[in-house]
Length: 287
Image 1 (tube, helix red, strand yellow):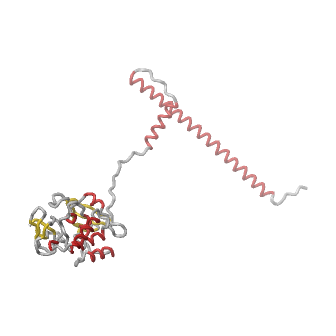
Image 2 (tube, helix red, strand yellow):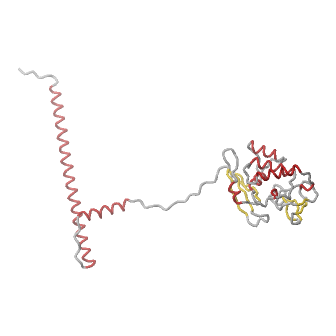
Image 3 (cartoon, rainbow, N blue to C red):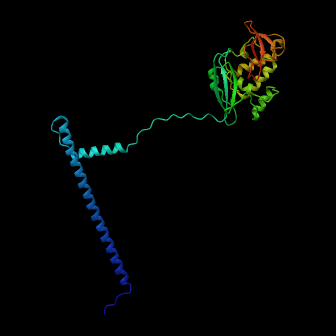
């Protein structure tokens, strides 16, 4: 008598399930092959139709017998058409303007004392609040005035950093406005009055230059300015431009005090220390 193990039924069902799955895979594989053959037949049929159409078109074009097209040629033409259809159309180049620096001052400068031409310069500041005047220095501007701070139009600058406060103190300014120090830092013309051997600056002018050099110690004229200040300290000359007496050797456009003082240029032109609309400090102008 044959004894059937209790797990034999489970094993038979497992083998039957395995056979069923194998049969399903075989049927799916046969179906896939039939579909591939059908697709190949369709593609070949399309290629043949294309060759026939191409041959007929060539006959109508020049009445010459058309060269028989090959299946490879038709397939290549079809591939080229698909590439052209899927290739993206190149877009026009877009030119973007970089945004202006967040911390900056704008200056309106002239290249001569007559202010015949003016140019606006944007001077950026670094993370420590020190401004970079190199672009203005390259242009060699004779006279500059502040026009905006961080994009906001204004002609005054209240010191905010410790360096700016020290510069204002060194310049001996009574009012909390250091815009004139930025203007001095920007000016870099060889016609600068402080570079003239015939000019002796006053104590207030020397103090102002000291404050400016704290904000722009790498100014192109820094060394010459310091020599001029030292020379002025050694000379006790009443023609320093700080009193109401007539001053000699003044330079048009240079800062001066007090308002109403009179002086002469090296060429003998009478000048007057005066303001004009928008000025923060008086300057020498033709009387």
